[in-house]
Length: 121
Length: 121
Ligand code: FES
Image 1: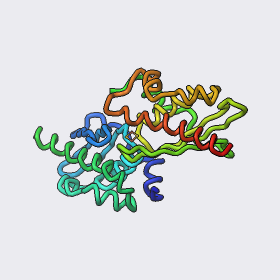
Image 2 (image 1 turned 180 degrees about the horizontal axis):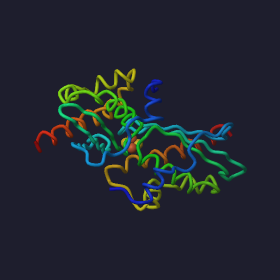
Image 3 (image 1 turned 90 degrees about the vertical axis):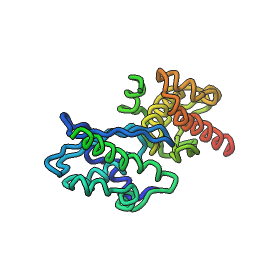
Image 4 (image 1 turned 90 degrees about the horizontal axis):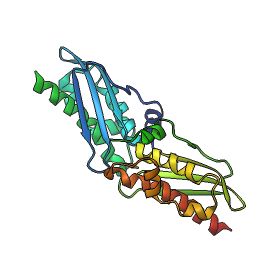
């Protein structure tokens, strides 16, 4: 049911945790299952130099967040805003259709963090 | 949002894994979120002497399954059939209402395993 990449990012998730004194924090909830995702960004100039996430969500939420954090680390804010849940799912060699709703958490949490960051500036 | 007991059973889940040559195996899916739970029972006479579970579900699914396996280990099949998701949630000092659907997986997987076991006999 799950690709090798999903299993890998589920079993060994990258960038799990919090960033103390993060420059941006975003938290979103999933309407479908009730799960929550929190994303922490460290931003220098225009670049996301570090990113961590925490969730109580399912394996698909963990795998997509792990992959999403890898994809935006070192990227500019603008590039990160272009990240879509489809691109993350593709990078994981796909997700079962019934679990696509989980991949939305990572995208939305990144966007919420950047939105909060922009609001404060 | 989550009780200490939920956090404990999520961080240190009991009875995770598979049982080789299990006497009963039950697998169920959650209609609400698409998550899957697999439950393995070792049965001697009328007693559940060992139980393990595997899931790709969320933290609440992991915590409730961990607690449910603790509650049925050493019990008779009949006692295990009386396990309800409410009793498991109560033993965990409650779950947020939005996550109650996750607790159904453990109850249903236990029942599915026992059902399959009875069918084979
Ligand atoms: S959200 Fe699927 S089991 Fe909890």
